Image 1 (cartoon, rainbow, N blue to C red):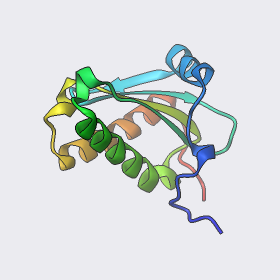
Image 2: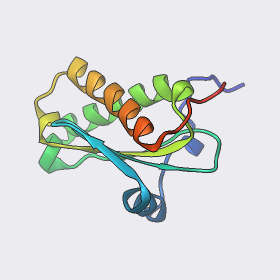
Image 3: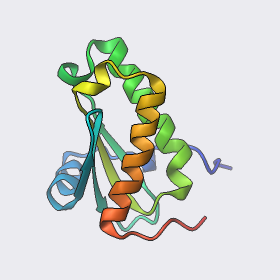
Length: 124
């Protein structure tokens, strides 16, 4: 039985078409650390895509740390998030931000993106 807080492959955006759809049709929220694009989906649950570049996050160690934090915040927030596709893009502030700043930024931006779309909270 899968945990309510799991991050299974079906919760990930992988195809270029999905990313382009979210960028084109979605709403955006951002700060100095991250930008989040969100668009509705018909899967019944939230899905996550990430774009963390060397220019904004640094070397591979830093990029992977940022990715781990994004996945963890999404995984823990997922039961409360509406059924939207989220694409998280790092910004230059992610390079020097500590973990609490990354977490706070992501939590606030997930809520802001959902509010911009007027999406009701998930029911689990």
